[in-house]
Amino acid sequence: MALDEPLFPRPHPWGVRDAAEAVALQQTLARQVREAPLDADAVRWVGGVDVSARQGRLRAAVVVWDCATARVHHAAVAEMEEPMPYRPGFLSFRELPAVVCAWQALAEPRPEVLLVDGHGIAHPRGLGIAAHLGVLLDWPTVGVAKRRLVGHLAAPLGEERGAQAPLVWRGQVIGMAVRTRTRVKPVWVSVGHRVTLPAAVALVLRCSRYRLPEPIRAAHRLAGAWEAPAVAC
Image (cartoon, rainbow, N blue to C red):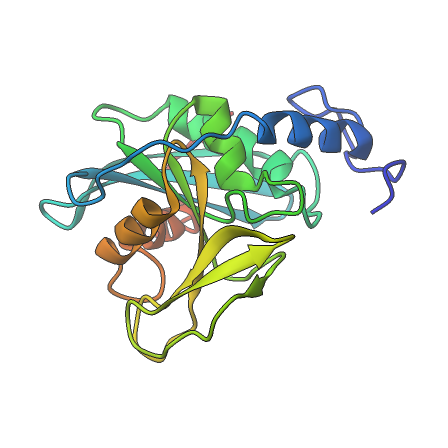
């Protein structure tokens, strides 16, 4: 979209006024993304993040998945008026205000790492929703997306569970296509913040029985349960 094209039909909670300011903020925050070691096998508490939309409102869920019991330990859900319609490349500006509201309502223990339904750095400006959330919270995050935004596969992707192929864009590996179930469409895993790509892939596989990791599947169910109670933002 053109930078002078209207992006926000009403004042945004973050004070961003138009596409040019949104792009500038993405570029600034993308430079703050960093990788850090994470032992995927040692993590117990894994967060799942997802958002649903209905009739101009958003419902965000953050769950805490206990790897020891393979169950949701606790969760928080928040609802608010959507600050803008969906625009490709600007998903975080639409959904993160509600996600942050749910995060603030989340009880202890906090998840050690968050799996986010969306991209990390595998984004045109290196700041998908998972990377944006990670930098905002300064928390380990992983992007797990159902579709790719940019890039191409550097190698063929096998059909078996665990098969991987690098996602490359502009000469750099920005993520990994990962087959989480045999002969099922892959997910697109990328670094959000404070993780490495190998650790991100290992954690996604550890948490997956079906196509999407269980923490994200649980968050998706809660985000879609519009009749259930939620924090109002």
